Image (cartoon, rainbow, N blue to C red; front, side):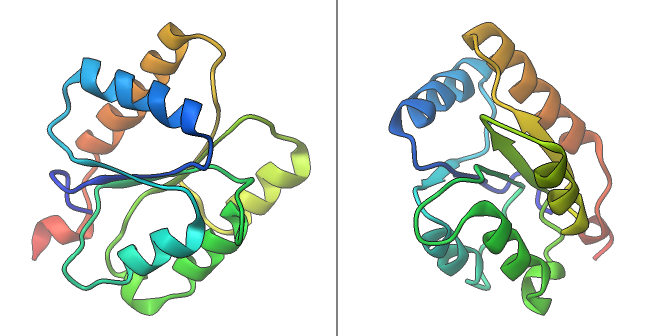
Length: 141
């Protein structure tokens, strides 16, 4: 985990991307925000050895491969495992099975997208600030 690295957002809903973009601008984090509309594009980007993201926020319901399949591919990829990138689901709906499946894939968080901009901003702030405070193995290289 590189705390100055980009924040990867995997979200196929353009309206949600626009809201997140507005919130990240308002919060003023220095991390570059990179959006992907499908998991395959994100996986290709993450597979590059020169990329060390800070955080991944992923929707679940996406075209081509869903968030669970993407997380599984990252979780089982030895090269990506060593990057220690926090992977969080950020989605509009949840049930016991989806939350159970997510944690079985060792996600580091499962969040419902809040309905208001204020609540969304508060959630994003809490997520980013939590991970900024965490210590990662990469800090000891």
